Image 1 (cartoon, rainbow over the protein chains, first blue to last red):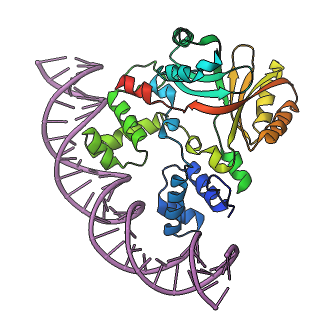
Image 2 (image 1 turned 120 degrees about the horizontal axis):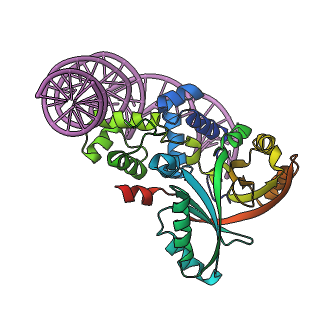
Image 3 (image 1 turned 135 degrees about the vertical axis):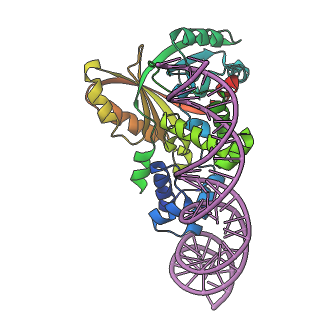
Length: 160
Length: 160
DNA sequence: AAAAATAGTGAGCAGAGTGCCCTATTCAAG
DNA sequence: CTTGAATAGGGCACTCTGCTCACTATTTTT
């Protein structure tokens, strides 16, 4: 075991566990153990370790925004006065339609992911962002479709 | 029942269900029923309806790429020959490090989300994308941090 | 106004799954 | 050689699940 890794590193068995979970998110420990040819104890121990090591993100990510009435997704590049960045992030976090934001290297300071009900809603949200102190400019792009739906399976398969 | 609705629309009880699930993704039907003051039957029926209506996305989204050894995320704007778009998407889907891609309105044709091990890895992946037939230009931005981690809770709260 | 669909409740039951305990074995590292 | 980690297997009390049925409201349709 490496001493300098910051995070527990997943081995092939962990990978297979995750693959099995991707295939069926609701499968029980017993079923997983059966699928992987491991004992139930082992599966439970590994799952606990995976959870403790932060391998799982929040459940929010599994909720379809469209089901909530937000069929549209947009990415907004936000240019800001950099020294006000911290406060701006706090302000942006008050806007519920912002579902995610990344601090970026390069031209853009922030890349903000927004969900909205329609174009008018997007326009309004963009206005709210622009109204934040320190925000200088935004560039809005509407996502027409998720041509490659979020996936980790190809990466999982490569280790397995 | 409306005839022209494309999707089952969630009511307040569904929303509360999702909130409870966000708070504890592993809670059982019994626990959810208890929390919401509903009968177990009702919870089970609603969960089934939620699942059938496509309210839940794949489990992949809950896996932390960092745990898989990909601590870095980048967004790559891809400019393409538009009439080759369909084939390009197929080609990009072959690249495992591309975890998501959106077709966009505006300047950029595609916004591609990539995970990678380090800067050199990103450089290599960008090269692979550029090598695809019909890809004309890319603009890569490295995500320095997820300053607002993915969330739907504020939107859920607003309905609740 | 009557009939029908919809949603919820409560009860029950057999079977499956969970959490937790203990022990034995294997295997690699010190 | 000793130690510790990972795994397998057994066991036990308890909980949860999936399912069915009967009953009651509420709303919608006829």
